[in-house]
Amino acid sequence: MKTFYRHFALPLIAVIAIAGGVAIAQNVSNYFEQGGSRTVIGGSLDVISGGDLDIESGGSFKLAGTAISSSAAELDAYYLTVNFDTVQTASGPTRVPVPAVGDVSNIQVSIETALVAGVTPTFITYISNTTGTTPITGGDVSVLTPVDAGKLGSATPTALNTVAIGDTILIETDGGTTTSSGASFTFTIDR
Image (cartoon, rainbow, N blue to C red):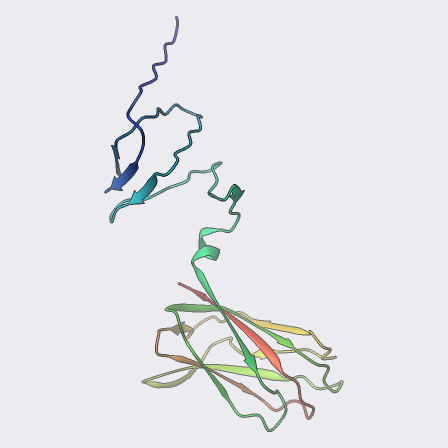
């Protein structure tokens, strides 16, 4: 038994629109075949409201010829990086405005200069909004001793970690060190 394949010639692709999961081609002059590759010069692909562009397992999404290896969750996360001026005992709280809606899933801190050996600064994080200040459950970040320059600490919040635009994240230290250092924070917000 022989199998026959047919190629269908269509006019030049100017726009392919996907509406509600149905592809609509206009002015198409190329053809498609399983496993084939086609180049569209000067055209566009618009996914209209209700449609999806789904790259199945084994496929890849590329920008300028380079495959994007990030997961969907990583691409959808928002990373907020802020600096805390000092972690010494007298430091007051620092408020950071929240630019995204979602859940704080990870907090990381890096100490900029070495601190006195034997002290462990702990940063306490809160979400502050119109209903008051709520500590983030599991949001305390300790930087373990010895606290050298570049030393990292991290925390994985488990509850009370949902933020909205208009909220602030409040960072304060427990005053666990008498020497001064700056610190950088990165908050991962899953949207």
